[in-house]
Length: 501
Image (tube, rainbow, N blue to C red; front, side, top):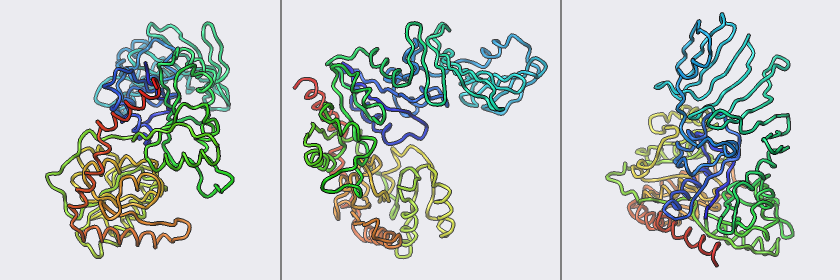
């Protein structure tokens, strides 16, 4: 029996979906069932193993669609620079060393290769570009052997990618991909596939799924129909990671589903089960299915995160505030900065640390400078927060929509008080108003930014007027529902019911 978790891509700054998958892996690893995390996107910025290992997946848990049809295993990159140089069969005449990027010239400098190193500390090569007379011809990508190559042709003075060749361990060709503007054609020894969806179909066939297998769709847009048509007797579940419908475009007669879930919701009678992270979202979704779809499918509640331990501090810095999120518009970290600046006027001991990266980083940095707040508001970037939360007293969130909120869970797991807006679904799951923090009512379309910021500031000021220890104790009680053992039990119950009831 295998649980297949299907996703698109993974990166250095992964989304909540990938972190949810990692937490799921932690909950399922001790079970007898095998777990596999399938990534369907084409990835060439890194060896996928570098990205999956960085997040915390084990190599034997990972399936990459494009590597699946070869006999090359998911493994760290280990090809050495000298191995590449020896393949040139020509004397190197000049070297340009730029740290992680090294250029080797040969044939009287008319040809050269560009070696992209895994890092500056060793001589392991991730990728090599081959250039002849100023034109890019080929790129080779490496794992412990050459994994695949990309071939280019000049077109209007630009290198145009036209083919990829995927290899087996012994260097033989596993299959070719021919690219055009809209899609690809995949050529195997015994089969030609005319689109990526056909490649996914072929992948599903090769899995040889049975009634003992479970497929969990973490992202379903554009592929749900293909997965549904080729799952055979395996059980199919869809994980809801975000707001599932558009509130403003929904009325008594019609609901506008989130387009990421529209197909699976409209075909919910074909889906074996859905998973929501919170009881609030489950209840709302059930009522909507009954009203708009007439069919109410099975919906399970399984938190997308878990807490290995509840972290107790040696010392919490008084008046310390933390937030952690992507620095994106919808997270409204700018509101938090402005609220802290305002609250500082009445609570001068306040400090605020912001963790995360994103497109709004420079804007937020400028906002801090403009308010002369550099001495008490700090941007720390993306760091491991496992043992940082408990050093703080208060976590604040500016998000106006959270499907779950992993950072909220991590904050209650370290006993922090929380302040956030009374919006679905994460905040009311983790914040009990006036018990472990404050849920702030908000009408986004009817309130000005200054009104919203004022509410946040007032809640921050009020929080520090209280005995914060009582808030911390209340957060620990909430956190007990999200411990690893509790979440493991929920997965056990789900698998048992889906497969055997």
